[in-house]
Every structure is written in structure tokens, then in C-alpha cells.
Amino acid sequence: MQEKEARKENLKKLEELGYKAHPYKFPAEDRIFRLVKKFKDEKDQEKLQKIRVKTAGRILTIRRMGRATFFHISDGLDKVQVFLRENQLGKEKYRHFKYFNIGDWIGVEGVLFRTKTGELTILASDFTLLAKSLLPLPEKWHGLQDVEVRFRKRYLDLIVNPRSREIFEKRAKIVGIIRNFFLVREFVEVETPMMHSVLGGAAARPFRTHHNALDMDLYLRIAPELYLKRLVVGGMERVFEIGRNFRNEGLSSQHNPEFTMLEFYWAYQDYLFLMDLTEKLFQELAEKVWGGPRGQYQGRALDFSSPWKRLEFMDSLAGAMGIEKEALWDEEFVLKKAEEVFPEDGGNPPSTYGKALDFLFDTFIKEKLWEPTFVMDHPKVISPLAKEHRDDPRLTERFELIIAGMEIANAFSELTDPAEQLLRFEEQVRRKEEGAEVDMDYIEALSYGLPPTAGEGIGIDRTVMIFTDSPSIREVILFPLLRKK
Image (cartoon, rainbow, N blue to C red; front, side, top):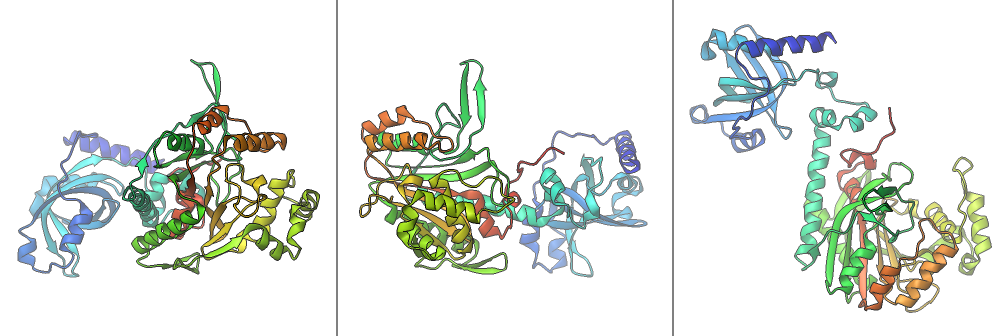
């Protein structure tokens, strides 16, 4: 509290000296990171001292030495040293700086030079207050270690932890690479509704809301799938959307209730085509983020070189469980097996055949898959929107991409038959699957004709986790959902 009062007093003194507490603008013509990059190798003092700069940043450190002061300012991307000298600024102006604190935003004008230690420095001819930090920065710049505080007060995390800024800069780069990947392939980027009157596109528990003017209950979307496929019906043959989905489910290192997905649809293609396309997408990401096909995640190597491994869902699950594949078609057997291996402290075991299959797969296979792997040909019961497999009517043409034990993508050859889609929806309702509803408007849209189409959803957050070597999804979401204090 004493520190806060001292800073308030410093602000009052600066205002009395003519500084504005909240100025309207400061034309910082030279961004710090650009200055450092442009002149990092310049050693010629005469040349440097002819370069006038006008820049701004937050004060990180202050070293006062009587009639001279050194301090560092940062723009969040890099930092530069500033040198104040009494005989350069004048005694009165130099005295003003004693009311500045670490954390304050400051505008600086001057020329460049290098100190005896070779550090690029601005010899200031003027400075001004841009914003006063009335609260001290955490831990005196030794880093903000409390994970809860880092996520709850991300602005502090970004100030004191360069690693956090790097993650979100890289996230923006990754999203840009993905967007361009589809734009150069003649896709149209679209936006579909965030509020749905009927659930659809995934099996998940929704968030509910109410529209007062229309007096109707709505759901925050769990997936944009059914709207995007409506667009393909309408003749938009290649569409994609990068946007938020909402699922009213648990929190974990891999799950946040509000998350970002890429979802795209390509008419006239199938799921086999999408496997090859997905490899190309991730290899392009690896090249532009890692510098090549190989990288590391959590201390273990990852190799995105082709070809990626492909596993059949039922074959691989039966092999991992040491049972005959046909046993997995016995609903009672699968439910019993899921109950046997379900952890005692995990709540209630899966109550439906589909959920039990998913649980067994996650338990016996998914978490053990490290290198990029396509798990394909899922049973129809857990794939209500996927086309029936051309070789086995019990299966669908679907794949999931698993990397480092996480599901990164989910894709189908899309179900295009409206009669079959209606039966699948009704079966979901009969089995009381989470969020199951019959969307008759979507059935009507299919009745106008959906050509052969392949569609895929890719989790942006988990993809960013991989490419930034982040152990938790909360590290790659600027403001993750947290419990109340």
C-alpha cells in the first residue's frame, strides 16, 4: 500500500511540473524492436550519433548514479537502454525523472550511441510521461511464477514473461499460415451463427441462453458443421471458418469450455484426400514454425515427415485390448469392459455403447500415440454425420488425427443422404446421446442435394500447444476460463 501511495505522490509531482497524467498521443516514430534489429551490428559511433530517434515503451529497470541515469524501456518485443545526463538535459529537466518508476510508460527523444560495453543506447534530449504505473510490477521483474495469477492477470504475465508474448505472437503466425493455406486453394472464409436454436455438429453438452426479444431459448454453438454444409448445398464448394465453439464440459490441460476451431469443407472429395491434405498443412506449419519437419514437444521428438501412420479404429482397439475384434460389436461386453477399467475416482462410467467405445479407445490407444497418426474407419454409432464406409456398413469413412496423445483433428467423408441422416439423428435421440436433437431444417437442406463432400475440424488451441511446446491449453489461450477466486 505504501508503494502505491508513493507512486500516486510521484504522479502528483509530475502533474505539478506540467506533465499530463493521461496524454492524448505521442508519435513514437521508431518502434524499439525495429531500432534494435536495424542497428544491432552498427559500431560506428559517428554514424550512430547522427541518427535521431523518437520512441516509447515501459520502463523495466532504473539505475541512478547522481547526475547520470541509465534505464531500459521495452515495447514488449525488445528493449533498449536510455541514458539521461544532467548536463545534456539541464538540471531542472533531469530532476523530473526522479518521479518516474519502474513500470511507467515513457516517451523518449534523442540520438543513438554505444556504451563502453557495446550496448546500443539512446542519449536522451527529452522525455515525457505517457502513463503512470500506480501499482508495482510483480516480483521485481524476476518473473511471474504463480500459474493462477498468470492466467487470471494475463496483462501482468505478458509484461514480465517474454515467453508468454512469444507464444501469442506465434499463435497469430500459425493462424495466419492456416488461413493462407486455404485461401491459396480457392476457399472462401465464412462466418456462421454462434447462437443455434437446434443443437448439432457434435455430441457435447451445450451452454444455454435466452433471447429476450424473440422469447426463445438458444444454445452457444458446439460446432459450425451443419451451417457450413448448408453452404456447400448452396453451391459454395470450398468453405472454411476459424472461430469459437462452446462446450459446457470439464476443464483440463487439453480442454477449455471456449475454444477455437478451424472447420472446412471441400466438395467432390473424400476422407482419404483429406488425410493427404492434412499432412501437407501440418508440414507447412512445421516448415514455417520449426524450420523443418522435425521438432520437439515436452522433451520428446516429433517428426512430421511423410508418410504418417494410419490405424483402423476397431482393429487397433481389439489388438491393444488383446481380444477378438468381433467382441467389440457386443454392446454389453463393451459397456462391461469400460466399467472394469474406469477409474474409481472418475465419476460415473460411460452409460452408452458409443461413449464406452470412445472411452476404451482413449484409455488403450490415444494417450500412447505420439507421432502423427490417423485413426480411421470409426463405427457408425459414434459417427452420426459421417458417410457409411464403402467396404463395411458398420463403419464410417472418418478419421481422427492424434499427435502427442491429443486429438488434433476430426474428419469425414460427409453423409449426404437425407433419409440416412434422419435415421442417424433419431438413433442418437433414442440412445440419449449428449446434445442429441433432430435438426429438420438441416434434413431439408440435404434434400436439395449435397454433392460428395469431405469435411474436417482442427483444434487451433491444441495445434498451437504442439508448435509452442506448451503443456496446457491455458498457456495458449489469452484469457482461459478460471474458477471464481
